[in-house]
Image 1: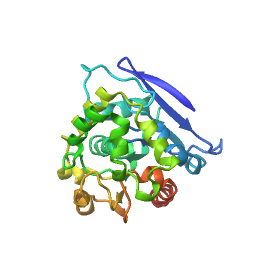
Image 2: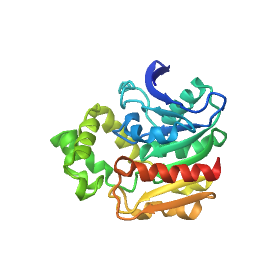
Image 3: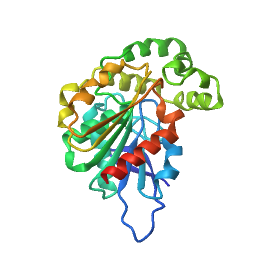
Length: 266
């Protein structure tokens, strides 16, 4: 179900799907998408999850149907964490199983570090400890030159494997992500590209699943090494040969691994 709430005058869009039995008090899965995406990108994940969990999906500020903040409003990981906490409080939800894709996982990591009592488990898909050691800052001049959709099309090999280039799935992905407000997305990526917290991942104390796209083109594979070495309760899976957007084109595999992880730690 599509809903909305306000925080500091900004309107946020979110979805709640719950098909659990009415006599059960289910745990909540909170899902947060990556940069340029939106909550609907997790659409195919919901049916296999919402029979056993209440599933909450949120559009981050400036994404999807959530309001684009003005240029003078603050934008930081701390602000994005507070947005998540505000929705959790609005839903009267003390703690969640947090699922984050890419930048959504950055928010989840900081939530787990700063507010460990609010997270039961953390599942990260293509979400390293920061975007600083990547080529992200090179994206902005390319978007300015050719537009967002053409930039995404030109760099589709970063996100989808060759056999999916030009397919209806890839084209729908390009159409959806190209709807973003470009000035805001520029601010968002510019901020994320300055962030790195590899020296803090040891502070994430909850059970944590890290799914690494083995042939990811957004940052090198070694940026996940601090997670392999220093997450106290970490489990790292590598999808060999796969690109960054595993949540899009390998949704069934991602959900199966997520469900297995949750069953071990619920």
